[in-house]
Image (tube, rainbow, N blue to C red; front, side, top):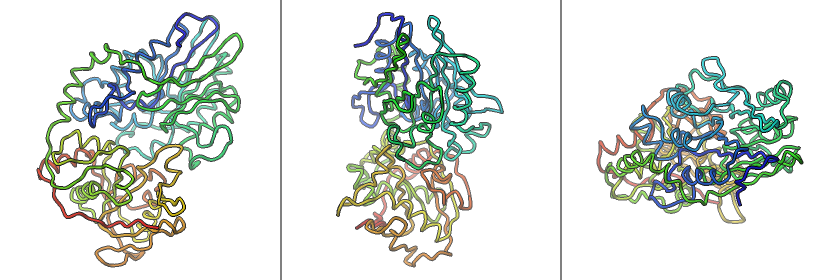
Length: 512
């Protein structure tokens, strides 16, 4: 039960992360009720907040929901709905996440300038100056609590250059280490709380490697190598994490507002208790009412018809849609090749993608292509193409004789977006073979691909930058950028042609 009454010997930290613009408690693909969203969180926060509470957000708020997508596509000059929601929820301090840069410098600046609380992201420079304060200090009856924030410095590896032209990112670990050292020296706090939009590269209890230790996630390094860090609030990987190791309490609530982190610091004993609270409360009607007009406009926009198809482009089984390449993927690649003129095209099937029914609406589109990616055309040779396909073939694994998703793409974070499917070629993946030797057949227009052949290939800006360990793409010659969002390009194509029809393409054979 919440402790609403004033408790002099307890300081409470409430924290959210990876809200991704979700305010209303429903899915936009079908408007079914859900147990997430800021409206539910607002009720939960109000139950647990008292005079000795600090409310924090750990980033990734601007991108994700269809409401935010609608805002930046149709009404970008207005205040973003998530900005309004955060003001109503009454945060004390916010940190930034990597997806907060997705809509560009102007969008982020507008968001920050309209927030009614300070940003304390300390490792980002904008026009050479700190984006946020290096830290903040709160005093509770003589007990001093210091809070600082950092975001993963991996952002330039993913983000469009035009979106971060005037930003510079400093190493998150080094900034955290120096910040804690300065806080302890100058402020003499009783407790230091860190907000880190990143997560654990190693298991916090065993030290076992969880993911590639490339600097994207540094939470284990922080708790194990930064003395004087009492609490670390993490995010980024959409996992639920809660515990204590190396003398530091750590906590990470889930994404989309489905959970709230609660950390109680008992100042008379020094005990720090972390827990995760489920957002299973009724949604706050005041917040819903405040944004209802914008939500109504969004719903109308989502139901706008784009076109029709006589093909079955629905995604009913995501696993099968990847294993046997859904024709929805074929369609996206067909549009990308036509729009860019590239020889080949690659795309992923995103988690929870819905695909298209016979009547296609904007709702179908934004529920299928959910990220604000743009396109890049690269030039590669046959050797680089094979290396690329070998990397994407790592997505599969075997459980005895059954083909499954490689567990490292299931945990610590579901990374189904790492599996690219390429059109314009025919290829065969033998999952029984060792990683690096799985492409057993590769042809282009009926001819075996040789190392010296040259191709142009269309990929997302995220992939072109080497995102998800595709470093070989970063080494390819950059031919051309197409700055329009992919979802917008697809919408334009459908409205121009009105009806989708093509001969199904079954060019990828995955077997054991």
